[in-house]
Amino acid sequence: MEDSCGAIIHYSLRRAAVLQQQHVEPIEEKSIESIESIEDADVLLESAEEESLEIIQCRDTESSDTIRSNWHEQLSVSVAGSEDKIKWHSLQHGGPLFPPRYKRLPDNVRMCYNGQPMKLSTAAEEAATWYAKLLGRPVLQNAIFQANFFREFRMLMRPNERRIIKDLELCDFERIAQHLQRQKMSQRGVGQHRKLLEQHHFGLCCIDGELEMIANYRIEPAGIFLGRGKHPLMGALKHRIRPEDVTINCSPYAVPAAPAGHHWKAVQHDQSVVWLARWRDSVTLGYKYMQLSSASRLQGKRELNKFELARRVSSYIDRIRQSYWEDWKSPNLMQRQRGVAIYLIDRVMLRVCSDKSELTADCEGCCRLRVEHLNLFMELQGNAYVVEFNFVGKDCTKYRRQVAVNQHVFENLRSFMQRKLPQDQLFDQLTVKMLNQHLRSLMQGLTAKVFRTYNASRLLQSSLDELTRNLTSPEELLNAFAIAHANAAKFCNHQGAQSKLSSHKRAIRAKQLAISKCRRSRANTCRLLQLQQDLDLLQSSLSDAELRSSVALSTSKVNYVDPRITVAWCKKHKVPIEQVFDAALCSKFDWAITAADASFRF
Image (tube, rainbow, N blue to C red; front, side, top):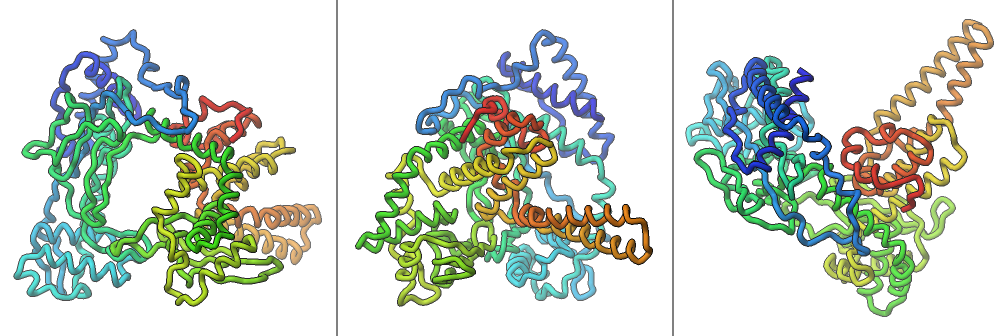
């Protein structure tokens, strides 16, 4: 099977290259939807492998290295770290892959209502299968979810079904759930085959003569919208996306064919964007995009420019901070609020947060803070001028933090809160638009996110310098690296799960029990000393474990920290890059691995 996998990927790359050079249309492939067993998939895999061998034989002198783009070796980034307006000159792809049509349940599998099996309309039955897949999950206990789902579920029913089905509590989806589980078990192994063939058919595009992988060529299937936190639309039904909903972006001569019997909503040739297709989410009404892989040339170039822009902040940071210091003392209320807001963005790493829609979760940011989100303390735990923040931030993540701030900031915050109700806006004279315009006037391209990237990267650089200055052993270096990254993630409020911390505490309890047992049994002294040393080591590392378990390291590592800092650190200390970047990050940051040497500084 592994040989077939390799042949498929190799064949896809070679075949696309040959077709591009010869300007011929690819032959029509068998439908992926026809795969119902491993045997069906193997037939297509063997066919693709045979074709790949023919392509390889006729192109055996061509080096496979020509497929791989080494753009970062020739790229010259502008001083501003800005991106080119023209992103591509030729763009060719096959369009998105649509989910298969819904197949009705067998006659003996029904949703029961008040104990009686019900034969539902096709649309209602499909929605019932979506609900059945969620049985046992906590979200089904949410009142908002239940109300939204049942309202839209009934809208899919025929009138005679609606007259009977009036209470979700009386609906029993257990038979459907059991059938879906049996179906899943019987098709185990087919999914891997199907994924390989989908990648073979839809996973590549050609940009300016370079082959690139596509990140998300599958249209998301219809289902139930879950949302995050207390999203007001959770439980709403996500309707099926059709070709008529999709806008294609490509070269004029390379418009992909729509599925038989359908047409695209629109076709455009916009060279200023890098998405390949887009459509609106039927619930949130926001756009979703078919994008290039994060390892692609264009995405890598955007990443490089993003971090170069953040590096430029170092040249402006004194001027920026001087500006908001002066704003604190301005007689103009809006300017004072602006100065305090930028301080919080810079020093406390608050996000700006865009204007809220009634159809989004109640998540706050700097410009939308309310009086109830802050508590002020002249002194707290030995620190003067402490502000306690308590609100729900991006992705419905709880932001609760106590921060000692500048005295002028503290006094301004207190004045902003005077004569206001708890639900009133803290920065009532300031808008997101006004703040962004001012940031751009201080430095071209400056945004709150650029501040986060700059501060997180600077913090990682300084933490690595401090924590690993005198370390030599691989274990100590990797532990210090994890702590440095955890510091950056904590600063960005990237919260993580507590499972690893629980495991660490269980190990401590196990050692304590072993010591007690050893003492009762009067075991040899050497054994007791070894157990005590193990316990001391676990307890000494508990604070580090608490720090690492309380944050989500991947978010800052992927989005906010310049990967060249990590690459340079690895090269300096001779740490294999694979020990700090997984395979996906090695691919995404290939440009950084190639470009940065041990002397790189952010």
